[in-house]
Amino acid sequence: MAGARKHHYIPRFFLAGFTNEGTKEGRLLVCDLNAGKRWWSDPNGAGHQRDFYRIDLAGYDPLEVEKAFQEIEDAAAPALRKLTGTEEPSPFDEIATEVLPLLASLAIRVPTSRRGVERASERVVRAAIPKALPRLPKPPPIIHSRLFGHLAPGVEPSPEEYEAAMLKFFEDEVRIEIDQTWSIAHMLSGFDFVLKKLAELYWTVAALPPGTPDFITSDNPMLFRGAGLSGVSAIIALSRRVAAVGSVYEPERPVIHPDARFAGLVNALTLAAAERYVFSASEQIYWKKNDGTVGDISDLPRRGDEDPELGAT
Image (cartoon, rainbow, N blue to C red; front, top):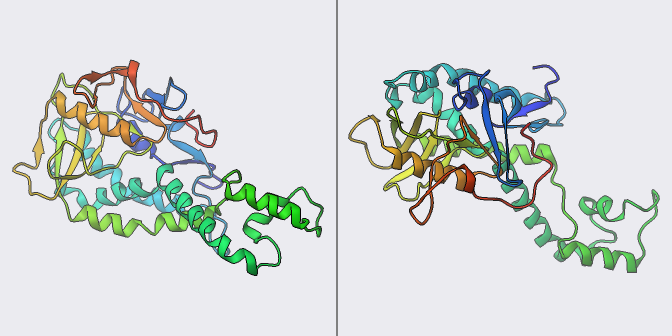
């Protein structure tokens, strides 16, 4: 892992379960909901971003976080195969100790989570600066370089420049850049809380019977508060054929074999939670629309403008 730059926010072994062969070498269809494009890749080429977990902190390996996630993945992979690598999956309770940390990590390590931390931090900074401005002799360091980087070193802006720049700032024309190490630290701070909440749920394994449409996954695979699923607090597709359902109610059976309607609903929730990318084993994507009709790959929902920071080659 020394010097690794391609950091997978969705683990490769996890994506392997959604390929056409169920292996890391299998083909994986990537659907870009921003650009409305799709292409074939593989687990190594999807669900990653350059230096996404790299930290800059004295006394720590820059890859410390990436290595910590790798340890969670290494522990979970063999246990997950007991659910996804057989026609008769094991009850979830038998592998919960190894798999629940993976699920908690998938809830907090993804781009959606990081962006949430950064946007909240930006709102706090924007709300605090106006109160502090009258007492500050010069612009706060957090925005000085962004607003006045064009000035020579040691040269301060004139009062007119300062007023114009701050007006621009408060009109949201200038974006605050949150330090990545700080952002990652706050992202990780939620891990124990999420793990505790997941461990409090009753879990059921949902294995699709032959002939049922596949599950899909996304760049934000851990779903919470499953709309339309009574009592469900969390749900995640673990492979193209198996999902795990966490509920506040104790299930009648530890393993169920649901029909196509269940697959369509889970896929609809997956599409709704996705930030940008959806991953599938084939072009046969089956999902339930809000109006009750069935959607396919031709009418996947679209997101906003393309974000160049996220990659899935």
